[in-house]
Amino acid sequence: MASKSRQESNENVLKMAKEHDVKFLRLWFTDILGMLKSFTITLEELENALEHGMGFDGSSIQGFARIDESDMVALPDPDTFHLLPWRPMEQHAVARMFCDILRPGGESFDGDPRYVLKRNLKRAVEKGYILYVGPELEYFYFSDSKGTEMLDEGGYFDMIPRDIATDLRNETVLTLQEMGIGVEFSHHEGAPSQHEIDIRYTDALTMADNVMTYRLVVKEIALKHGVYATFMPKPVFGINGSGMHVHQSLFKEERNAFFDEKDPYHLSKTAKCYVAGLLKHAPEITSVTNQWVNSYKRLIPGYEAPVYLSWARRNRSDLIRVPEYQPGKEKATRIELRSPDPACNPYLAFSVMLAAGLEGIEKGYEAPEPVEENVYEMSDEERERRGIGTLPGSLIEAIQLTEKSEVVRKALGDHVFDAFIQNKKIEWDHYRTHVSEYELKRYLPIL
Image (cartoon, rainbow, N blue to C red; front, side, top):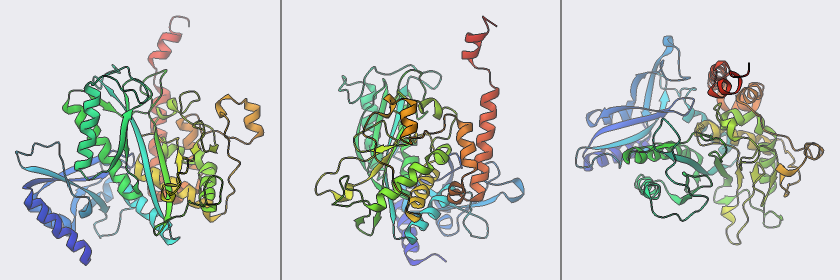
């Protein structure tokens, strides 16, 4: 039996669907890799779907279920109802809702990434905290999906003459806003044809849904204009890859638990323990925040991607940066984790970040001294002397660290943890046995 508030939300969705002449509703959810999945129902099925969910076969969804236990139920979250603005409104409107995945008996399915995040957020709530996040997702526009032909030669914050990329970005921002997603700003990024749109800070579950929507909107608007948008971490050799810097803070009711007026960095003990947790467990969560073979082509020194386990205020070579405090803006106090990339599963990535931070708070980890110098320019000996470790250098190295991690297993749960590790090992095997164009050009003429 739905609660009264859920019932009211359901009734509101039914009312809006009729008012906007919605004929089709897309039910969205994600697999363990963060790939958006969808199936469509008609308006006539909406009331039943909201009340009881819609059954589907989960055996073909990555990381969900074996064939002998494949029956799943997608229960729409009425608070995520939105019209899809890129659909032709002169025809019947189309709307979407994110779903929670249940077993046929009604219990939450432990292989659902959205449930994984909800479970971790509940752990934080039990300690009095709400996690807020603000990711900055970078991406590239190319002429098509078959190559890397750029649309512009601009650089960071460049005010280039108005071209298709500017129009694409502006239309994307307007579409996101139509879907109820707040945008702080957008700009050209450091590499040619690279762009960034920053979503307004909000709670982690809403943000994970927003990231999934954002990635689809960016691609849909690009497709509409005959070009291709990609969140591939490192599509072009020799220039910056695309990151997803994640700003994060914990709130206790209306108060920012990361703020301390007397601290030189304006960071509380809670914040510093959270930073220490992220630094200590960063290597073992990296396979989740950077989950593809290609992710590690970005995580190399020299291209603005942080690989060293350090933190500081002004230094953008550090893994964790503390944005400058602005007087009177205590609520904006936050830390920025700079290693994740925009091709990760946001539900799982936010889960392991939070788990690492909470581990630091629960066990009272001490944050190391901040490093304001450029870590890239230090010698290996100096980094070793100062205890500055590094992130894993390849997917297999990252997987091996994750496999031993109790923090990640607890955060993801056995089902997702085991399925994720298995999937990533298969990906690594496919990669390591593939003979690349580089090898043929390098070795075939001489060996």
